[in-house]
Image (cartoon, rainbow over all chains, first blue to last red; front, side, top):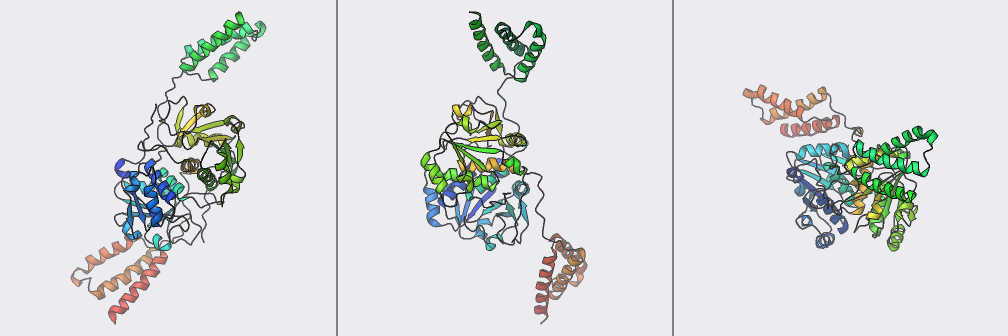
Length: 249
Length: 249
């Protein structure tokens, strides 16, 4: 079993400062999906504003609904839901209305949200599935965030939009690769692999005496290009020895 | 109406070279969600391998199902679904099995996929909702991609995982902000705004003659900190003139 513990750009205290606010969500699957994405990326505080009550109840009752959903807080207005935050950011698919707000692409806006999370709470608002955030909701926002989408289809599913926004907040472009557990073969191991292949090719008649030097050089280069691991060298030696044994017998 | 046409890191021809391959998907909502995310991020070619037939039919028949889904191709095996691709990448939540493959975080793996898309086709495989990709499926992959998730919940919803991976492929960390349509106020406009505020504060008695110079300096700095736009200066002048008129009458 191998578990890769991912490093995030945000520290636990910073993850804890984000408030994901769903305004007038009507679909229990979407509320559940938003909660799932939050859990995937380490965020914990979900707030819902005047949800469609049946949907909210269903989402909370769903099998596998996280503690996160059980602990979500319900508010009657956007103003109350964002009251303790120093930065309030609305999400929008744009194109729908003449925006009165500064608009930032997720890549840039994400950096600004992260910066603020270093010291204080940020509310990230998502509107209803059908209408997005109303102008009334938007009037509580400092600026708006939009996910860069193709003009052929700018409207994202709510759960997917939440997932993409939260991923942007935690992604780390400089993250180091999880430790490679593959041990590269040493030059002497590669040479052993080359040796058995040469022997097999001589026995099989692939290497002609007249062109042996030339062919051997090509084979040697081929084996280097394979970039074998130590484990693969052993595997390779076993295969070739069997082939040689068969050709000789 | 304002439509922001987003720029992507991938050119149209590159977007067209990706094959999103869903292996043994069982949930029509997830197949539909994968197609929707592809459409959001400008990708066009969906392939499904031995899907649960009822789910595939339902997804294709769903209201609003994109052309993309109608044009998706069905294959009986992973080998056939990836045959024309030069790079085959599997996605995994890790933690489930001892991986025999090199594993890359999405941020790095995404760069490698983009590089390959510059010249040839890449297949990005997603496994079934319950089990992910099997070892048999993985044996067709050059390496594996994992989305950095919090250890508390590493398992992502299929549709959300597709959305996050595709977003990473098109996101552009250096994208310029959509043109700011807010026109910053000039210094003389700011000074006019300051002037009416000063007048109002004198009339109201907020500015005491003895401390006038000191208070006026503070007020002048306050107005500069507001960082007004040209439009807001006009708005501000209107408000203040009304207030002054009321105080005088």
